Image (tube, rainbow, N blue to C red; front, side, top):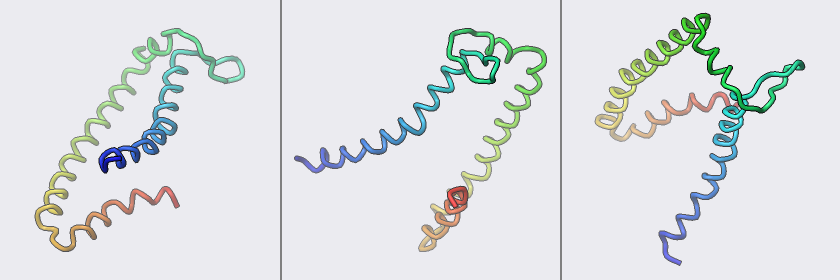
Length: 113
């Protein structure tokens, strides 16, 4: 067994993890989006495009545009802040590079507490 083939096996647990916790729920939500809600409030699988037609109703257009605007503003703000910070850490971080990276990443783990 070559060294490369040995390390290729390590992608299997990550692939299974992504499939179970990301792809499967995403496919379930997509399948439910074509269905409808019954009298008890449960999602019923089926195929109808009424839900997607309702998105472009005059009532929901302002909400849709506002959501797209917020998403665009967030992307621009992240780019304007993220690239200079990454450049600074990469260029001038020196021996504190890993400490600075940890200071940036650790707050993302707060929701696991």
